[in-house]
Length: 149
Image (cartoon, rainbow, N blue to C red):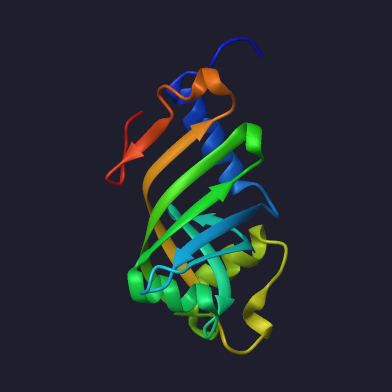
């Protein structure tokens, strides 16, 4: 590839990555005291939301429900998408309906057979995407929940 991708191509690549089957995401959260926590999870992209499944009692669930925020990293180092997201809602897997179907269809596992799991439905607020140093400029594709392209 020669030269940086334009913003429209970066957005299309980002959305395609988020919709890829069995894609994983790193989810960073912080406790009320500021203690950082980072965990890899399976990801689903549905209805313009990023969805992860976790045990309701997990540190990730506690941090996200308390703060309402998470930072996600999707993709390899040289094709990364960084997302600042806010909590849209928490859905118990037993009550998920279509959300559970969409998650199971994309993720590499289905938590609906396990007890104590919830879906954290996250709304992207800021999205940045880049491959190499030549894409650092213009890496912000979404700001304040609105796509810039």
